[in-house]
Image (cartoon, rainbow, N blue to C red; front, side, top):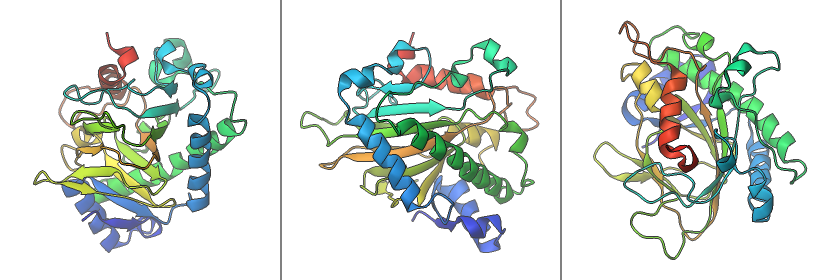
Length: 302
């Protein structure tokens, strides 16, 4: 059973809500979040914007193809990612955008791929405005969620705050077409994997597809209508909290219905040390993500 948590109750520090979050973080790795400022209309609008983009002619999408870059910005064609080396490349399409540094930020001089400039298509005309507005508001929801996690692991509410001043936050539109007729046992919309970073805030169009692996190995469907969010936690946060928060395997096999989902991958500053506290080890968040991206995106593999 995936816990459902109300964002308002979480911000208020309701003890029962914090208990439910603690169970979700420590035992399941997933929850459904309701009652945020991103209502159903906002989610429906951003999903419609992504749908319009993915339906554009391929030549237009190729104009912002991330395969021409050294980063994950812009459009990714079907089979451009392979999250599980034991499976075939994922058959979904994606569109990625991320945190943009200010013009005078000294980090710009380091040419870090995790802070690369975004690539925006010329059409649909409103696409950039809608996606950027959603990105900004999703950051707020994700920050509030992470503050709740801090309380759930008995840390100060602001425990993570200073590590997220320039978050390596990636917003993605996923387009899962109808499952191809040629698809076999090794073909997935996205193969079984754990997320690489800290926290994922996932909006969907309501079409089922996501499955979570339970501790006894079963695959459990999890869904949320627009206005509710599926939250899960990544490898980085599991490492950072010494297992007080767990990362859980999940997948999308696909069905006879197309599906669009919009995850916000909320990750800390590039130089944040995400090693377990007191370990004496330094693991930079940017290095961890770069390694995992290089293992996943086919255009970044050596």
